[in-house]
Image (cartoon, rainbow, N blue to C red; front, side, top):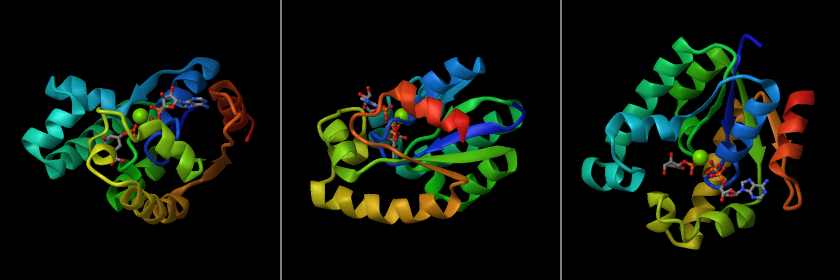
Amino acid sequence: MKDNIYLCGFMGCGKSTVGRVLAQQLHCPFIDLDDLIVAKMGMRIPDIFQQKGESFFRNLEHFLLQDVSRGQRGSVIACGGGTLVFEANAQLAHCYGKIVLLNVPFSMCYDRIHSDPNRPIALSSTRKELLRLYRLRYKRYHDHADLVIPVLPKDTPEQIAERIRIE
Ligand SMILES: Nc1ncnc2c1ncn2[C@@H]1O[C@H](COP(=O)(O)OP(=O)(O)O)[C@@H](O)[C@H]1O
Ligand SMILES: O=C(O)C1=C[C@@H](OP(=O)(O)O)[C@@H](O)[C@H](O)C1
Ligand SMILES: [Mg+2]
């Protein structure tokens, strides 16, 4: 596998979980962009948002996506939920691989994220605000995705990863 696989979708859709399993199945490296950000800063994501601001986070996210895309071939990369909303990031991902969208209903994402202290955007938003963000973002994700994988509540990470592999 020469190209990278960039997993995309709303917070809580399973990018990090499915990405890890997919990389195991493919015997290839797995990179979680959020983990890279945390390692680079030595800070948790909520602290980066609070102390440095979201635009600082977005700049670092872009820089690290660029760095990892240029340095890695044939890897599975779990993006953050905001990464592929930005045109420059989507262009980078297209240049170095394929974008795979996990199409997960809002209620499933919401149930997983609404009380998670590690997701500052989810924590500071109401359900209605998150639904609005979900709708806006899925339009962008769909514009950029090379492959869309519909996910149902009963689907295990292994089954989702398997489906990505055979597509
Ligand atoms: N297919 C799945 N079935 C059950 N739970 C899942 C599945 N995918 C993810 N999860 C759970 O949902 C939560 C969010 O998943 P995560 O991979 O962190 O999403 P993302 O990286 O897209 O924000 C985690 O607690 C994870 O264990
Ligand atoms: O949707 C977003 O803007 C974000 C999603 C998070 O990643 P997950 O989608 O893995 O939760 C993380 O990058 C940060 O909290 C911002
Ligand atoms: Mg994640």
